Image 1 (tube, rainbow, N blue to C red):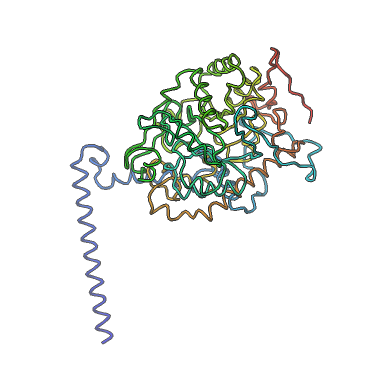
Image 2 (cartoon, rainbow, N blue to C red; image 1 turned 120 degrees about the horizontal axis):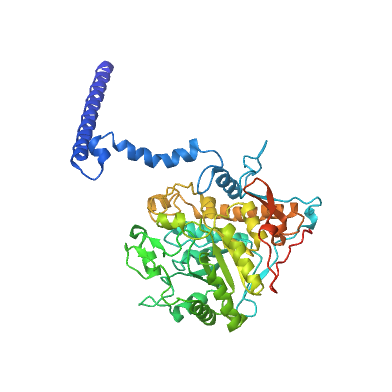
Length: 507
């Protein structure tokens, strides 16, 4: 009986094996016919079936390089050392390393902070100072001591679970969250964070049926106490001169309702504001939004044509200081996005290392630095990068991709395909289910707290009591000849009266 059962099982197994082999052969035959008859891909036509492996290996190469072949500091856009620090900070685990740094100190552009012989003692350390945005100019100015905040990521570009986790984590740590140009969702509000509402070129969330800015909808958004400021997005680091791109596959009914577009329709924002074509019109728009909402208003841009800032700041001084934006967000040419043409992502705009000191110095030159606050964005995901931006003159730091890492992003580079494996940059429920907002919000909060703590550690090592006290003379940068130079010498602070101001070396 047992022998008969075993024999039957073996026969069935053999039959199944033969059938599987047959199906496999038939499948390969169909692939062969499909490859030799198609005319779009030469490799597949000349090398049917096996030619397909070329495309598979090309796709998988991104992941193999990331995990097996690249050294800790070789990858782009973010290397393993940077990602690993964010992961550890978000999980609130030990972020110390041993033996020695893997960072080269000889490459041109590398920044080194200057340790003070008399560092700030722990008991003398202070929290980041409180800053008021729009004080005396907006009906409801925004007061905060938040240092590190969530940059614009639209609901649509990222999932509702990601939005909720970010908002909840930001609330827990006292940071603000920028909506991105996709409008205000219930998930932004549910988390409880302070909100910066971004007005993109398509005016999503605050536009009328014809796509024009609508005062009534502006008032509706401003009526939410959580909404603290409004940001007019002129351009974005990864795609200056190009509007937002959200593939139709990501446009669900919920997202379509918020944006005022059709379900499944590609969301392509205009490449510029149709109602802003000059510095005068930008100031008019800022004044309008501030008047209607009663909240501080600024704009976001990646620096390109530098004469624009001379024109803008001159016109502010002509009109009066009340006409100025309450803040300017400076994005870097190496900023991030969900989707952008490679030609713009690779070649358009100026990087933050050049644009941030330029804008800060122009504000000083035109005597507007105290009036206009500076928010810095663009690859500032680790404490040294954030500390550098503060030393160069930024009042606040914002990050998008750093917070994606805190949510579990593995840099799969699938943001534009709706196939993000971590459930962050996708609207596919199959992937979204893996992202637990309750768990990830804790990581977001931990990331913020550890970032602020370590930026503070750098500040204390430089001999100042809190991060915003960092100045350009607290760091040096390596030049082409291998020698380093003070940031204050490389970027001397201008004297508004005409002569360069020498940044003192006192601590």
